Image (cartoon, rainbow, N blue to C red; front, side):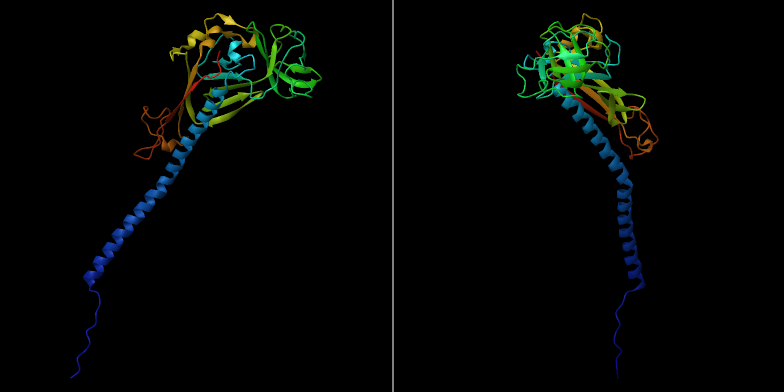
Length: 312
């Protein structure tokens, strides 16, 4: 008698259990995948927010470290206020927490002295091209298209544009119009940078102004504030820079108290530009958005503290 071979297989119960396990694992994997894909825009926007903060902080810190760098005669703060708490377009004698102008002589910048007086309306500056100038330089190293500053021991200073050069002469113009004073023979003239950082509130931007125009340093900025400190790190209120006495003349007249500035703090608040990633709590969002739950990006506050190394 022949016995039939027993056939192995899965019971219906085993198949149901296996299917349930497969569905559970697949659901967990798909859930993690969905969570990761949903979080990608949040991660990208957070990265962008911190990158913008880093760019803004680096730009401010870099220029603040150069502020007031001068000539062999000493830092610019010996002669005039190289740190000006206002925009050049602001009225003389004012101060703003949302704008800061810095002036400095770049490393290796051209430098000389006037060989003849420079009258307020004069368009030609005659420079001493024989003392301390590079050998063979046409106009002591100055070149057309650069900015310069002329200043004297009385605290007067004016920014100039070098339009053309000749043997020992500079053809100059004043970006703010005629100079207010006449500069005597021996007054210093040096290649210079004047840069302004300011908060463009309507467009929520940190902007940099130099020469004849400005450009965006960082956007989606909700606030910018500059604070000033003396050598003992005591805060200097803005009112101190508005009440005189004033030094200099013309567009660069400044409150004498700006010479007390030894450190500057810049505080920026940045936000995501995506409304659906900003929540409604005003403690964390300067401009509340429509986001709910945990998928939000709070505003980020960046602070830059720099000591002014070029001071008398």
